[in-house]
Image (cartoon, rainbow over all chains, first blue to last red):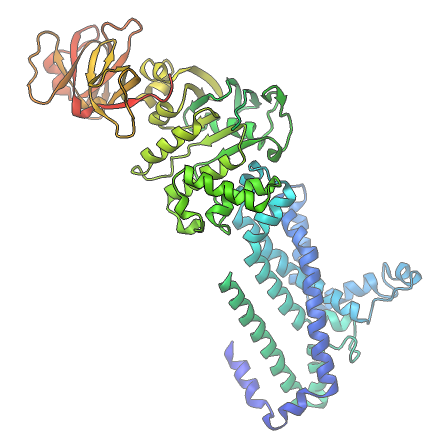
Amino acid sequence: MLLPLVAMTTRVDWAHFGSLITTESAREALLLSLRTAVASTVLCVVLGTPMAVILARTRFPGQGIVRSLVLLPLVLPPVVSGIALLDTFGRRGLLGHTLDVLGIDIAFSTTAVVMAQTFVAMPFLVIALEGALRTAGGRYETVAATLGARPTTVFRRVTLPLVLPGLLSGAVLAFARSLGEFGATITFAGALQGTTATMPIQIYLQRVTDPDAAVALSLVLVAVAVLVIGLTRQSRSAV
Amino acid sequence: MTAAHLRIEARVPGRLDAALELAAGETVAVLGPNGAGKSTLLSVVAGLQRAGGGRVTLDGRELGDLPPHRRGVALLAQDPLLFPHLTAADNVAFGPRSQGVRRKDAHDRALGLLAQVGVADLAKRRPHQLSGGQAQRVAIARALAIDPDVLLLDEPMAALDVDVTPALRQTLRTVLADRTTLLVTHDVLDALLLADRVVVLEGGRIVESGATADILSRPRSAFAARLAGLDLLTGTWDGEAVQTAVGPIHGTPDPAAELTVGVWATALFRPAAVSIYAAGPDDAPHGSPRNRIAVTVTDLEPLGDRVLVRGEADGTTRGTLLTAEVTPAAVADLGLVPGLEVTFSAKATEVAVYGSFKR
């Protein structure tokens, strides 16, 4: 695990490290990556939480199939996810014409980046949260209900606090996955600097023209990842 | 404080078919073997399970398919299930807060209730900092905080250490007075000390119902007989002994019993503490005071390397059943056969005396 990281740091051109990571394109890529990853994480939480609650707390026919579908992006090659998204929302896709009429063009925009990242990161949040919900069990919720709490109150004051650690680690995983997303993004959103070229894409592109810059940017991404993990660990131990 | 008249008709196919009525303020103990439908009965009243073809009415108000949070029915289980992210006081305040009571008022009520159940000093603790007994006290306070019309207790002391149960039972005795309560239990003492009445549930049906002492001393269902397992005689406490139909029974008053002269009391002893002598003059060894009861043997049942001797106490019109556990040698020596008149003898130190909760 550690060896590739060490190998990479030995290749870093420390003398020009500062200037390499502060170029216009590098800064734009980093900011874009952070912005889109945060947006995707928020979307994952907003869309994934109800999904996890439904999967963990209810029983309905075909539940197994629904769960498999939710987890599908996890095992699908990201490029395939990108093509699927393109075939749905692209200009010549299933919904593309309708959206075109409405004046909305998603493919190859920052929105497309967020959608691609949300698509591939969602399973991480759903898995983590569903696990937490199952572990917490429904017994506390039952007690809360017999104490006169309405279902919304139960969810807000009992369920949510109980699964918060699970939700948090799910969100971190989703964030990390979004930050590292490459295949689906480049397929669905392309690699336009400042609009859709996120850090991984920028790194991939620069690897050909400027290997030193690519290595330097990679190191920045590693640093961001370490930072995020460190921060969540701290906040979790404080809970 | 509120107490309501409760009518239950519960029909859950294959599991429960029982009708039961509780007067306002009455405590009824539900006894029965595992899988008899006891917990299902509580679930139906709490609204966690549909009453099937039956119905549940509270003071004439049909609960029907009302969801649990609109029933005014509090449930206390074997596991206290305190919300782990809230302090003891916040746990107790949870119910009132959910019903819109202001934060300050809910907190004050919580502190008052914690004091009532004897854990006022633990208000700021988190559940993981509480012992099992303390947590269950907080859970009792939490259930009382919503001032429920009906309190449902599902083996509230089954998961606790034996040494904390008497004190907790005493607390329950105080808080259950004048509350309509349905108590599921495995423990004879719970039934005896907390309940006005007992129903025995077997295979989802009520097979026996009546005053606690009657059920336990003259069990008609197999389960009640097994459960009783203990010898039990009731009468009035005269300051020294329990005056029963078979004469005075000397024993050791339970420290928590608060016995006063003239109250209804119960003497309990284990069959293994009983010795059997031939009927006739007192030829038993003297020393510590003994209780002597004239008994007619009704049946003998081998139990491992011991023999259970059951007999009907003479002088009781309804035939109080007593059991002795003796060695096969003693059975042979005395020539015990059904119909023989003998004397059951139990040391006063082996007999525990409890004051009955209500009469």
